Length: 184
Image (cartoon, rainbow, N blue to C red):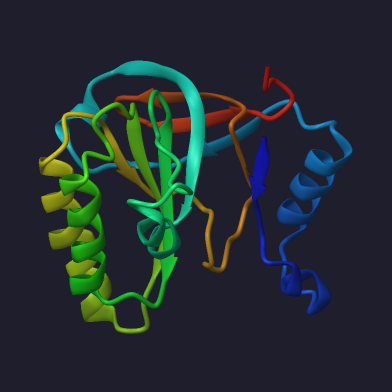
């Protein structure tokens, strides 16, 4: 197991939120039993169908993971929930990266895709990403695609444990529950 967490410079600048600090400390101390991420938004029909997916979360920064495709260091998401976040990528670049993942068959055995923050400076770029790029990407997949995970480089940077037990609840109010203590 590993942790995709808040950037440490935020703690030095006191730019973190108390919930982020508490969650990171409870994870590091081994006392966190469950992290709940609610308010997710469904991007495709597969994400709106009520059901539960029991799996583990893998992923990280979209550009970094895309650069590992075709190398011995690429981590396949077989049977996992894939998490992506990124910062400063224009819509056409995000579209190109996601297309490469699709063409490489990266999602063929994944169970779902959940996006965290995809930060851009321009409001028009943000609209293109949310209303064009992600829906077009999600339409290519038969697995659920969701957005809204408060993880990544955004103003809210909640920690997300990777490779521990997780439950993705789909339907009207999608949410992700991660159980950091249960990794065996």
